[in-house]
Image 1 (cartoon, rainbow, N blue to C red):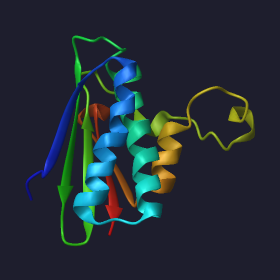
Image 2 (image 1 turned 60 degrees about the vertical axis):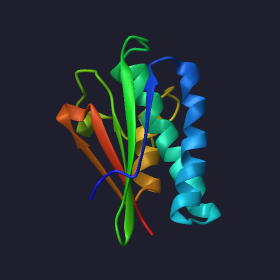
Image 3 (image 1 turned 135 degrees about the horizontal axis):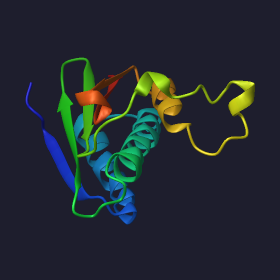
Length: 133
């Protein structure tokens, strides 16, 4: 199914704030409730933050592409950066005792908790977060 909404950001950390406007459009277009709004906002903000800061190293000449696809029973939001990717299975579990006091490392965990499905492709430079509706 084709994407029904899209946004491209340059990799300036200030652009992370623009995610909220995108999510508001998604919630309105897809007629979603407040709980879903919160889950999408947190998950997408984490994905875009990771793409800008880690994927593209905040290099403003690189972009992050966000696209939305709606199907009969779910929505999928794809976030793609221009970085080399990462080994998403190697991210330490932030709930393990040895990681509790570490800064960072919670974004991927949060996305896995709030989304119905998280799928990494292109060596981790693309993530699709899915929500059942």
